Image 1 (cartoon, rainbow, N blue to C red):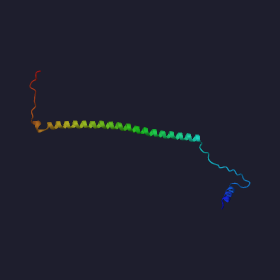
Image 2 (image 1 turned 135 degrees about the vertical axis):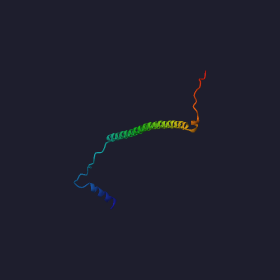
Image 3 (image 1 turned 180 degrees about the horizontal axis):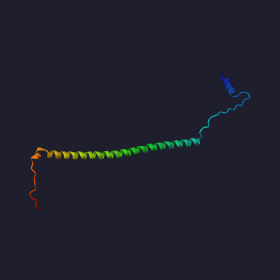
Image 4 (image 1 turned 135 degrees about the horizontal axis):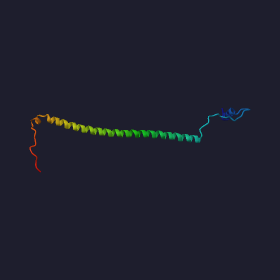
Length: 115
């Protein structure tokens, strides 16, 4: 097959006797440039809204975490204070029940020191 015969074959495929050479392709309507721009703006707004909700959730969890950390520090301080008080009370009970404290005599004031 030569080049000229292949061109003739292609022409014959589209143009035949007693037929129109114009053909119409039926296709779906496409989105125009204005509709496309509007659609992109709406999608951008939705993505921005999604981003803002995620950031807000993160901030909310940050505030909750901060308040829980403050509460934890307060409870640790309270625990340390209670441990010190417990040690002091145990020391007093130990001293009062020791052999040395039982041998001691109670001192009563005999007189008031003048100024």
